[in-house]
Length: 362
Image 1: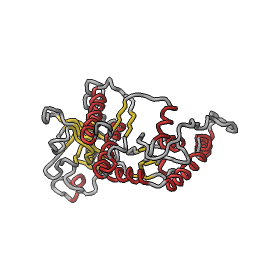
Image 2: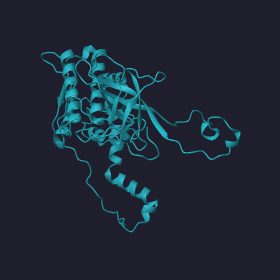
Image 3: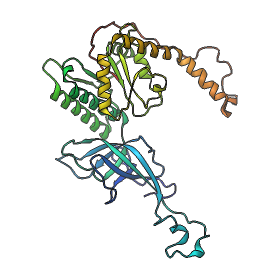
Image 4: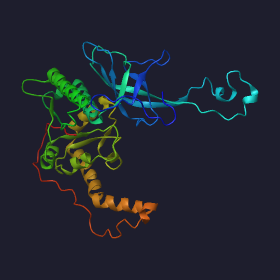
């Protein structure tokens, strides 16, 4: 519980990452395998859509449980017994009705929906434990893998014909929690490959290394579709790079999260809710069976948008908007923007491909 503007008093873990709160549960608000509650300090960077990670205290099947969730609701309240308690007091004395309210401690409570649990079996109610801000990129990889697994389950006729490629360069591997998540994602990819793979086909190719822009452009161009499914994002240039890299005569399809900023412009993509792996799985199947005519039409619409809204157009719009604010009258801002301020996006020719190409990249 936090009061006023006090900072959280949680002690950072050995790797320097401090918890932002703790899981709580009551008889009226119990935790389930699908939903849990937690409190935070008032200054915690938590809101609707925030991804959090819960670390339990007691091992299950020899492993400390870890739960990933997304915040779906928030509450703010004080420790009053009733709305009038602060004014009337315990005895309800009318003479106190005009008294100024006293300061009360504000409590922040959030409800989160479970995205996944580790270990996955046996399925347990979310344990009491410390709450951390999760590495969103790692959670997104897990959600994309879940969506691909749902696709394989629902459409077994595509077995051996589609391969999911996830390129995830290592990030902060020296931090224990990040290293644990990398191992969990590797284990998840291994489980899916062991369940659905064959001697001649590996469903998921999970790569932990960095590639050059030219190589990435070639991978984008060779892919039948690109999965770009952030839970929330300001813009997301990967979606635009995928469109720019396509062969206009035989383009791949962009599957894009509705919560990416680019979705406002790239409406010709297949827009999906990244919280719904089943719906994303259906979008994958739709992209695979889409006719060449529809693919060409969608790509032409997307390419027109990104060709017009390039870096120079974006900068001009930004500076025009800034000029209408107090900052726009600052003498420190440049007055002549006649010359382009940055290069336009250029993508190599790549290699044309026809038919069902095995590739995903996000």
